[in-house]
Image (tube, rainbow, N blue to C red; front, side, top):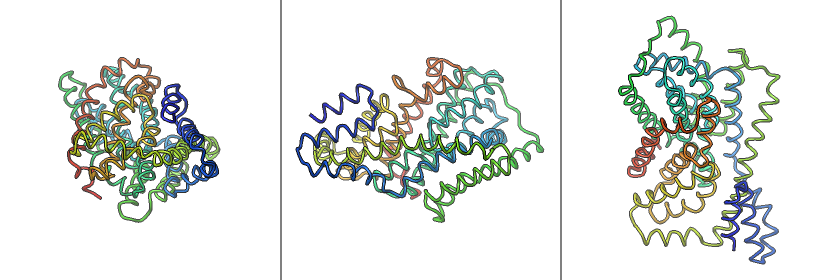
Length: 419
């Protein structure tokens, strides 16, 4: 009966955290085991007793402080220094600025919202198709779950019980591969449509842009550098990054007003609480899954079909693509990790880092695909472009992501080389 309750509540669009909690309660009620009832609340709170989860609200706060502190436009100006003179330069600037933002915000939806406001009007003014401008910005948001720091990596690392710092490092090479594939897409489209030719900055403009953006670059450097060199844990790096974002935005740029901190703390607390409640409910749901031996049953079914790890990951990719179309990426990673990860590591000897990167990148594709496609609608709302127009220009980027997913599934070393 529990699977029926799970599917029914999910199809009724009940919030995923509530779905997980209700399913667990129903299972306990069916079992008639009063000891499980007594342990329910303890198990929920136990799911949050993980030091690594502190990184989630801290990275969210860093993003809030950075947006309020005026760092976005300075990073866009810095990107212009490197690629602004190429044909289609503003499209490359959009992509490079998204890479900088991905190394700071760590959330695809937040990144799409910020960059749509900043880049789509600028690209439209220079003669780019508005649908293509919004599509490029939305595609850039796909870098957020792969380039560290990634909120999905934090959650996956906690659920998989692997070092979050190593998970971040594992995402560096796939992130650059994905960014390079997007650059190739822009180049091919630009060659075909004859994008406007950009202008290189003068020496004085270049120096001014680099100096202006240098303080903002301390944020990704403190996060990635602290983890790479073992100076700080991901949680400590997130705390340091939020402090730097506050000091730079307030004392260096002067755009951040201390009086606005209360509202930023409130927004951060509200957004983080949603994710943390899902994780708490997922810990109880995972408890039910273990009792039901669902991973073992599913492993038996899949291993009877194939013994090849690559074929297994192809099956997983197809399944996750369908899941990501109807469920938010963070909710989906919480849902599928306890079920599929034990099969990947136990039956196919797949590295949890490879599985995590493939799963996170795959699930975030759901942000761009109907019927849910929240990233698509955010880009549409922020840019004033119809979702259909964006989707029409987005498909080359989606093909690029698919090819990168196949590469990451076939070559484990792309995910594990730097660890």
